[in-house]
Picture 1 (cartoon, rainbow, N blue to C red):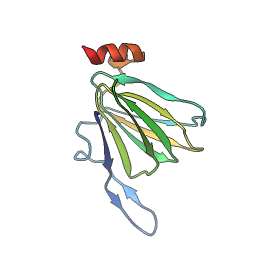
Picture 2: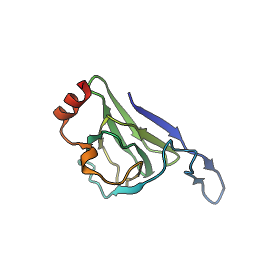
Picture 3: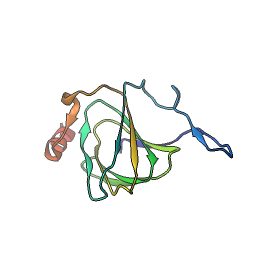
Picture 4: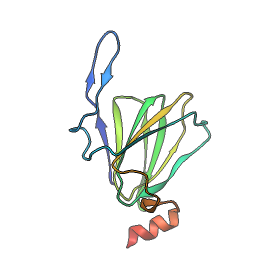
Length: 131
């Protein structure tokens, strides 16, 4: 499937750790950054795929699950460490669920918002996969 877990560089210090995302960490230039927060534990986010945009998800605080589907296989990845992120490449259906209290999901995207790049219906996604 078209995803990759990436260990971020981590600078450890007794005063607190720092993780850095520089140009060599992601395989694309950063065009948009946004974050999800105050998500109820029973809520689900995502529910779409991108035709061309790549996204890198980082659990800045707390934890959440990312369910990934390609039409044949399904993987659930739990993100719970702020120095490890999930790169979701093109044509992967994603659903975010099981948010812990206080969870924050940072998303670093390869493109600006473009509604035309989204596939928001799973049946449309399956059709797109078979083309």
